[in-house]
Figure 1 (cartoon, rainbow, N blue to C red):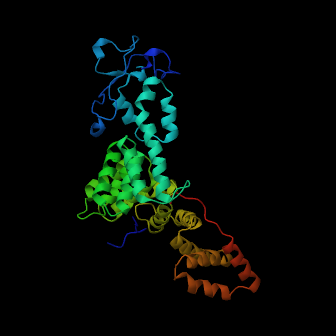
Figure 2 (figure 1 turned 45 degrees about the vertical axis):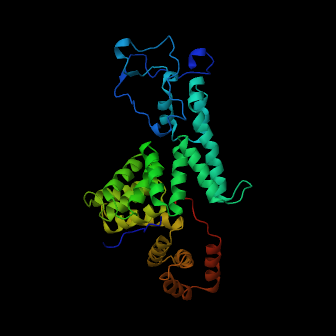
Figure 3 (figure 1 turned 120 degrees about the vertical axis):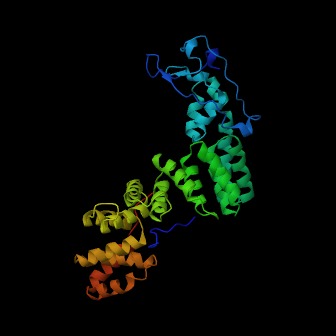
Length: 356
């Protein structure tokens, strides 16, 4: 999904568990609004959703039987609740959670199986691990993992469906993952809803916002871009710039460039040429070609011809045609030794890591 960088002007009862959860506090404090719905109702026949045998040392009184206590033995949670909690877990987290007690080990069996299918799906999709690339087998593996409750597999299956042109199937899987709280699923769902016909910008902004507040940097950038294009409830430049800055601080390179522009012109942020140059350089050092062009021009205006040539040459090699004439003018003003040294710096340049 290619996005423009800047918008156009428009049973733990058997005693065999290794450990149980520690009480948060000793005082009897109750949680409200215990979730009761089964998030895996589509697979209720495949997954054991019964409650493990209750132990004799329950900490809650009978008067609060419909509420959980902070110091409730977590091994007594119903299997479907455990699966909902762990739906977004990675393999390492699923393994660690399976060691809590026997009931958790049994409840998380479907997720451990889904991790196997997820790993094989990635192998088939990319042709790694000694297997040939086979998208049909990859999709089948992802779907089997998704059926066992893993949101990671749901997102990968949705992405593959989208790449194969089956957008409705992809959006359906993104939505399942999003409703289970997966930030990547929420982000992909939001982006997808902006690319279908007709668009649903209100719904898209809702899911992008959910992912953004969870710290998903791509969602933060996409939310800012969507608001910048006027797809939100109202055009708010301060809110737009806030999410550009949040994504930039999270390492998203395109957000760094847009943040630099916001500081440069004072759009949504207090105008600051110093902060603009800081973020422009950060984006340039991470391979953003437009930022390399802008930063190169800024260096030239400051009289630093050597570094200016380096960034302009990098921008030119990345396809920024506007960098060529300025670079050539500067090269004519430099000695042969300086030109050779500048090209040596360009050839040995490596971009810094970024989120994108």
